[in-house]
Image (tube, rainbow, N blue to C red; front, side):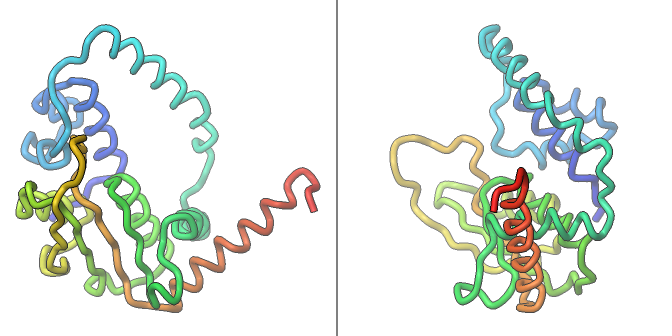
Length: 211
């Protein structure tokens, strides 16, 4: 299974959300149309209205206005540990809810970001990674299984049996691709991630001389 950099997935989904058809995205990124289709499951297609385009342009300018601060960041092992620890401290499960690494979210880019940093930061046995999906009863599990397996470069054999729930409310979550939980049963790594996050919080309170 070929692995692609995380930014390819993000860029493909942004282009699809902006109304660009899959074949044009595939040509732009030099990636197969089938791969683009897999990454963009659940996204609405079709060109947005002029009002929406204007709004998206302004939103994109704001989104990009401060991200140049990352241009000089070296994503080496130590920085990967810092960012991974911050993400885990915000989104991950802690003891006693879990005695290992477990992080759940419905945002594919966040899950991919965490797993990429986790793999970079620590020497792990990738065959011990486990993934659990919670999806709605009106969704195609096999299609979503393929999507997440391909996105995360995790074999389908490492996925648990999914939790299937009935959707509630009249508002449909158009881009919902299920809630994905990454699991790695190593309490030592869990404690290391939490320790990094707690040290980060302690140091951040001292910024600007706050005691």
